[in-house]
Image (cartoon, rainbow, N blue to C red; front, side):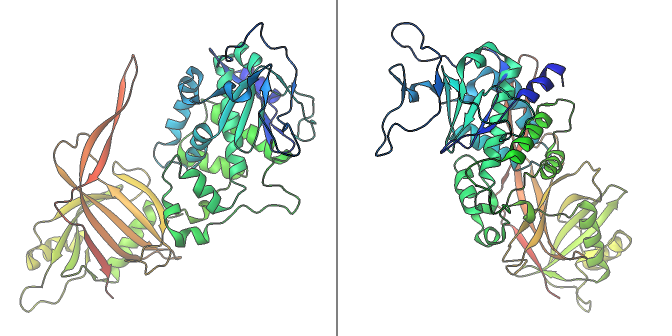
Length: 451
C-alpha cells in the first residue's frame, strides 16, 4: 500500500448525517467520474447541501440550480473504470476458496443503493462523531437508501483514490445493514445474491443478530463504527494483504463486522471429517439407503487424502452378515472379495487442509433427512479434475453431528457434470472455472445412519 493511499485513508471521514443520513465518507481513485447532467447557463455555484427535506408538512422535489437531485444519480457504479480496475479484483479474491458473505453485503451496496455525484459542498460533521483527531473534508454522505458524493473533488482525484472512496462507502453500507434484524438483512440481500440460510426458516430463527448498546441507533453510525469502516477499507484496499475468504472473515470479526450467519458457520475442518469417518469405521456403523446398504471402501490412502469407492449392497452373500458400512484400507480387499464389492463411484476425500481435492466450505444446516431437524454440519466434496469434458463424476456430501466428537449421521452421493464457464477476458489472459450441474439421469443415493 502506498503512502499516498494511507494518507488519503487518514483523511477519510465517514460522517453520520442528521435525519436520514447516517454516515459519510471520502473519495478514492482517479479516472473519469460521473459527469453532472446538462444544465442551462454556467455550472452551478458551490453551496451547502444537507440532504434535508423541503417541507415539514409534506415534502417535495429537491434540486440544484433548477436540476432535480435525481438527475445526478449514477445507476451503474459497476461500469465505472475505477470500479472495474480496483474493486472488482478485490471481490474476485474474496470469492476464491471459502467465499465470505461480506461479498454479498458489498454487492448489495453497489446494486441497491442510489449513488449521487452532486456539484455541492457537503456538510461537515463534528470530528468526535467520526472518531478523528482532526477536522476533515466531507467527501461523501451516506443515507439509509442513498449515497451522496461531492462531484468536483471526486473528478479531480486519481482513479485509485476514487476506488478507495467507493469501497469505503460499500463497507459503510455493510456496517449499517448488519445492525438490522436477520430478516431485514435477508430481505435486502436476496435482491442481489443468493444467501442459502435465508431460505431455511429454522436456521433463520437461530441466526444471531448484532448486540447493540441501548443508546446505539441502527440507522446511524457511531465513532467506533466509523473507525472500523476505515480499518476494513484499508485492509481490503491493500494488495499485500491476504484477501481470501478465510482471511477476510477473521479480519472483519476482529473489527466487529459480525453478521447473523456467522454463528451458523461450521468450525469443523477436513481433519474433523477424516476423524469422523474413522470413528464410524471403528464403531462399525451401518448406513442404509431406502432399499440397500451403503458401503464405503478405501482403496488408496496417503497423508493428504484417501480414495474411496461407494457401493450399494442389496443383500449379503448367503451365510454372511451385513458388513460395516465404512471399510478401512487394511480390510477393503478382503471385503471386496467376500461381498463382491468391485464396482461403484469413487472420489478422493481430503484428510487435511493441504489437498488436491476440492473440499467446499462446511456449513451448518437443519437437514431433515440426516439430522432430524437438528443443526448439523455438511461437508461437500467435489471431484478434482482440470477438464470435465462430457464425463459424469460423483459428488459426496457428508452430514456430521455438531458435537465434541463429530459423528457421521449420513451422506448423499450425487452424479454431476462439469461445464466450463468463461468468467472474464483481458488483453493478457482469459479465465474460466468449472460449473457443476446435477446429472438428473441418475438419482442421488441417500445413506442414513441405521444404528
